[in-house]
Length: 222
Image (cartoon, rainbow, N blue to C red; front, side, top):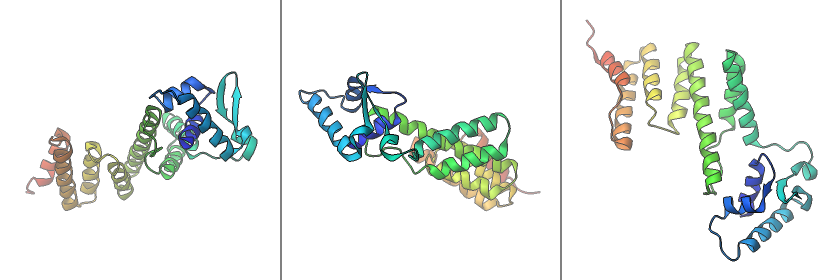
């Protein structure tokens, strides 16, 4: 409970009321909920220091700087900063700056956020961060494609597939990279992998773009 309360406060952009915290973390109200809240808060203050949990205007917030100084670092905050930086650079077609920020994003990402937590606040945050990570891999793959560094492009698409193996765009783009490398057999294997995955996971067949590329690969050479 203390761990989840800590991360909930850490992610908050503004101080939170007791009612807000209880609703988010312990939606199943009972007669002991008030005691649960205060005992969890007490435990958190023992762990981090009394002054790290501020209570002002009937709201709670974290103030880690008070106990630990200015060098408090949170990977999620940096991930979000790099995400913003990458989007701004891409909007201005500053590819080098964008790539640097995107690479830092994928370096920081370590899988699902807040694995021990199951409440809605965390599920939303988890999905938001995962979506941003997948988009970072997609952008890196596209940058690599534009520079004709096909192995790098394939790597980023594979990283994306390791999270969502039903992304047809990734399968298609990997096949296309192999085609440009004259690796017809590898492209055909990727098609088969895509077809099997979509059938097993979703019960569907590959889309028209992949099928056309497959027909192109299997067309007899005159």
